[in-house]
Length: 84
Image (cartoon, rainbow, N blue to C red; front, side):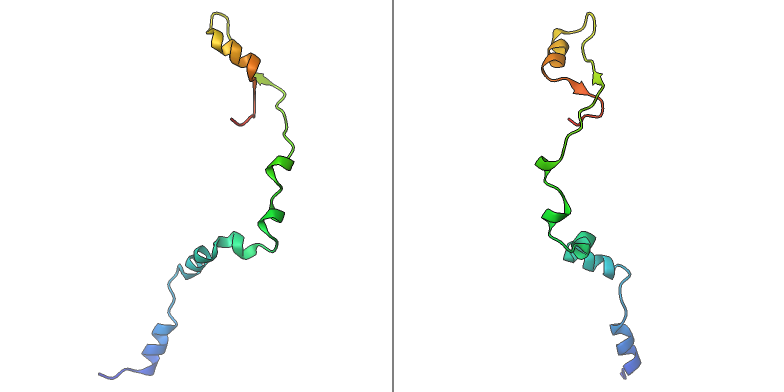
């Protein structure tokens, strides 16, 4: 059987549609490709960030409710917008 040079070269240049996504996944993703500085320069340290205390508290206690909710309000008050 004869093989034409066109068919060989044509097959070698064929690429899968997801080749670019695959190469990004192998190299660490878009973050690794676009990063110019080290990861420590990209993000501030967690301890250096300032916390914003929520102004409005969520009251867990209620009249006739369990005493444990009153204790929770006294020991660790929870504010709106606070992450737990």
